[in-house]
Image (cartoon, rainbow, N blue to C red; front, side):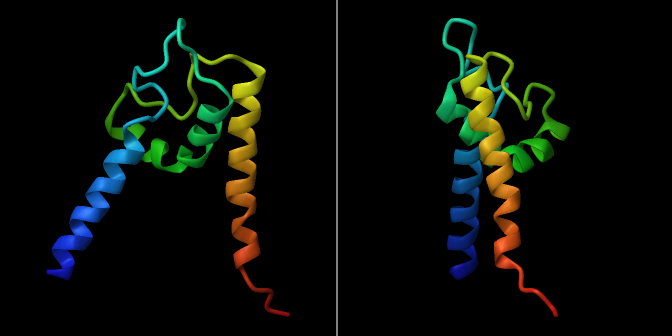
Length: 93
């Protein structure tokens, strides 16, 4: 029973994360990606990299964006996401 609930929960979370990846067709030149979308794409960039191997439409970076603000959000999420992992490691001195 626990394995079934875990599998269903994992599947649901995976589907939610992949539903709004860059290149999914959600953002267009008329409705470009903004600052908060950039943050979201930065957070899910590692997952988008893996999914992009199997789906040529998925990208890590949204081409249709508003420019500086999307890029700022994207890079903030990338830096804080990967830099934040260091806070969890312990020094072995």
